[in-house]
Amino acid sequence: MSDVAVHSSMAGVDPYEPSLFGTYSKKIGMWLFLLSDSLTFGALLFAYTYGRISTVDWPTPFHSESIMNATLMTGFLLTSSLTMVMAVRAAVRSNAKAQRLWLLATMACGIAFIILHGREWSNLIAEGLTLPLFPTPPGEASNTEFVNVAKNVPQFGATFFGLTGMHMLHVTLGVVYLGVVALRRAFIPILFGFWLLAYFTIPSYSPFHYGSYVLLACAIVISVILWLKPKVYDASDIEVAGLYWHFVDLVWMFIFPLVYLMSTKI
Amino acid sequence: MDAVQLALEEQVAEQHRHHGRAQFLWVWLALLIMTAIEVYLAYQHMEPIRMLSILMGLSILKAGLIIAYFMHLKFEVSRMRWYTMTSLVFCLAMMLIFLPDAFRILHIGVR
Image 1 (cartoon, rainbow over the protein chains, first blue to last red):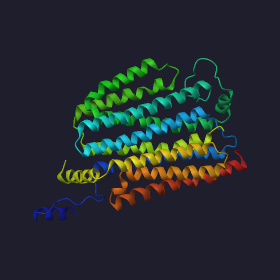
Image 2 (image 1 turned 45 degrees about the horizontal axis):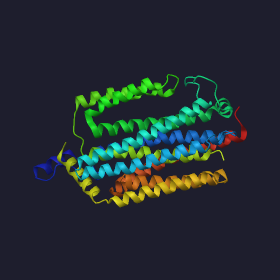
Image 3 (image 1 turned 90 degrees about the vertical axis):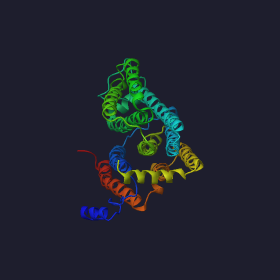
Image 4 (image 1 turned 180 degrees about the horizontal axis):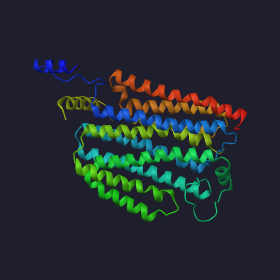
């Protein structure tokens, strides 16, 4: 094959083989990553389904407030996908200002999703639906039904927190990814600021207090990457970042009905 | 970066330039409407299996719209579309092999 390339080059023809998938390598790489990541989420969704089928007294703990909260979260994620395609559209038209604004709008929707999801988790934990590995919040659990669920059907908490926690981690990393693409090195102090804010404002009995170290880890990794290889991100980088963001949105389209809507308390 | 990659990037960017804003707005609106239908269905008294079938059907439809339009797969070459989607569907379908075991536990219990 290399002989063919050399001979073609000598003959004045393009020395490279045409792309198998008709697109550039970065994009194919991201697609391969997303395919492998979809198996991670697929396994978690199947674990949830397995637990649900094999447990007779599977709880349906989500009252209307939780459903409204999750619906709002879904709305934010869907809107963030729209703003993301607008960012890609601005990028291919070389409109740098619009591209940055759309990316920041996408990040804002992602942050709103994380805040709403964090609030949901905190309420559930305070009411008694928790995991043994989570720190114990002060005071008595206010909802005996949730305490019983945590005690009698531990599969629910384990699969619920595992699945939604993994998704929340992906959204957080997606916001960081977009921040780097939109603001480059200027995002590093902002990320350190976010970590300090989370560390000092979230109480130590919340799992998010320890989760905030994800931001610190991201800030350190990004600092090293941007120090070693500073670059200006072009339209292809925005498109690749967009693929990741849409994937996070897509996964939620399965988590929302399977975990929340199928467990609605009517 | 080599010339081929740059040429491919420009080719893809050219495809993107032809997408109108209205197309994305319609897809976003359709996704929101389907989400609203899902929430409405959650409050209806329905057999769980029937509810699950409808909700999963809508979710697959929503996922299809996101992959096709937002992730641009509809506009990729057919080889890319087939390789990615068939491998994904095959691998996810393989996981279904575990579900009969869940039913077994439900009927005979855990010993």
